[in-house]
Length: 280
Image (tube, rainbow, N blue to C red):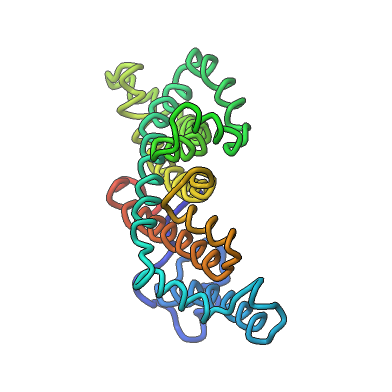
């Protein structure tokens, strides 16, 4: 999966040809057209939401109006003290994802490079990655208590085993000829794993890190489902128990926009951490 925007900074297209650039596969489009299309997708959702709620097709108890939810978000940030929940959830997501990444990347590289490591690790990894993360919640509480460590462990379990396989797949796609060429130039076979294979796969691995960051946010509510006293997931569960639908939707939107902020950060960092990648 590529995270790189196919956008050209300038227009470069006449007024009568912009639509052909938009519809032609693999062709770059102007920045304004990209932003306009992105805004249109959000606008369509808000328009449909408005029609359903302001038109009274759906009762406010089940789906509050966009204005009601926007007011709720504003109140959460200005008067109802949502910031400690945001900070707690962000901390848990980032730490759980980071621990997953620093352990999954070397293991994935080794699995793709050494068949012995693949034989040792991949079957076990494949079994565990199919297990539902929510099933581990009681065990993590039993082993780690109800503090941040337990929430971080749930997010780690939800991302680590998937990321290992994704990293191994990325490394396995590095052309074999590149490794053989490096060895003919004097690079040792073991050395080529870290100096050739890892840099060659790094752009795709960075894309996978971006994807797993999204998964980490999606596991947040699972992590904060039981025995929590703070966090956005805790806030959502509490609002659900009190039948405060507008707060539930506001919390979901906060998680979504926090995830979007991290996603944009990954896109902006891609040319910095992968300067040799020509897919930008």
